Each structure stands twice: as C-alpha cells, then as structure tokens.
Image 1: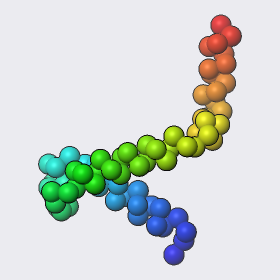
Image 2: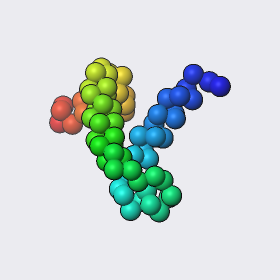
Image 3: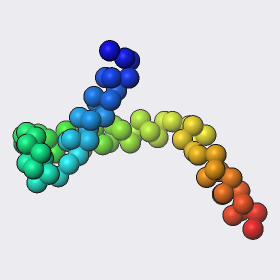
Image 4: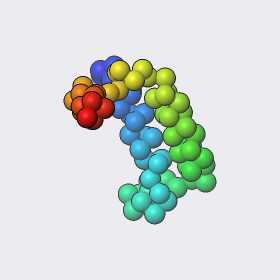
Length: 73
C-alpha cells in the first residue's frame, strides 16, 4: 500500500461520478439519484483545490518559454 493509492482511488471515484448517466449504465456503475449531485460537488471541490496551486507548479516550462517568445514578437 503506497501513500498515493488513496489519492488514485479518489481520482477514479471522481472520474466515475463525472460520467453521464448513459455511460454509467454502460459500465454497470450504480446510478443513484445522488450521483449527479456528488459529481457536481466533486468537480467544484477539485476546481477549488486546483485554484490554490501556484501557477509556477502547474505550468510547463516549454509553455512558459513559448509564451515569452510570442510576447517578444
């Protein structure tokens, strides 16, 4: 058991709840009435968590260099 396993499990659970109802039925996942509510809450929480991450951590160095080249042109 690694420390990353619970994080991956949470990510997989969030991905499963974000599927549309027809896809959940296709994969045999439970389609409870609260699933769409859970998906909305999960997506909002994930967005809020990612907004806290500093820009320099989430930016690819190649992307930053490309932006500098475009700005210099």
